[in-house]
Every structure is written in structure tokens, then in C-alpha cells.
Length: 189
Image (cartoon, rainbow, N blue to C red; front, top):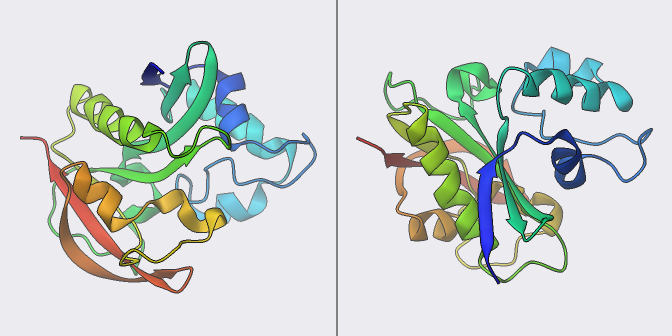
């Protein structure tokens, strides 16, 4: 299996990874942290996908993993200043660097357990580096090896990010699926 990760420039592939199965269904579209809360709450159904299409005109909203021509994974990464992490009261800022946030890692069913999440994180970091990011932050759960519900696994685990070279930079006041989230950081300088 050869996995290629590249910036997310194909809307249909982004839709495959984060859009709903039915166009009229509610779905995250990975906007929950990407846009201000008020905007996120006002967007429904097809409007969410159209908003993502508009965001993509400003640049890739993340990276996609491919096995051949098939999209098999997604990671959302963007400058923290343009995300809700910029003002999130539960996730601290450890300094004033213009860091990038990596907040969602998804692998399609049937492709999990093959190391694709590792490729996504590694190449998301490289994409951020190529855009001048001084560091990348992630906000995974600290689950101490316990099973994480698949609907909440998108944030990743502390161990996953440690294997990618990230180190714990701070505790947070955020909890997901009963697990505390930690702020992990990888310096790129």
C-alpha cells in the first residue's frame, strides 16, 4: 500500500471525507473549529458544504490521503488565528507564536489500522512548514490507552501525536468523550 498525502484542493474528495452521505443531512464538514461559533451554528445542510467550497478558494483547508486514486484520509490544519482555537477559553495559548492548529484526523472505514493517520499528521505538519508555520499544535485526548469512541476519535490521542514528535505543552480545560484534552506542540524552527 502506497499512501500519498497532498493539500486538499479537490472539493469532491473533501466532501467524501467530511461531508454527509445525503446532501440534505446535517454534518460537521470540519467547520466546528474552523469558523466562529455563531457562523457554525447558522450553517445548515447544503450551506455547510457551500461554505467549505468558498473556504477552499482561499486555500486548502487541510490535507487528504490517497491510496491510488481513492481518498482514504483527511486532516484539518490551518493557522490558529483563523480558527476558534484563537479565542477558545478552554484551550490555552502557551505563547504568542503564530502557530497552526491540527484538529481533525479521519481515516475512512476499511482503511483504518494501516498507519494512514501517521501519514496524515506527518504531511499536515510538512504542509504547515511549507506555508511558514513556526509550530503546529494539536488538542488530542489523553486517554492513557483506553478505547475512544469512534465518533470522538477525530481529535486523535496523545500517544498518536507523541509518535509524530509532538510534546505536551499544556493541560486544557477541555474534555471529550470523558477524556481530558491536552495541548501538544511540535516546533518547526
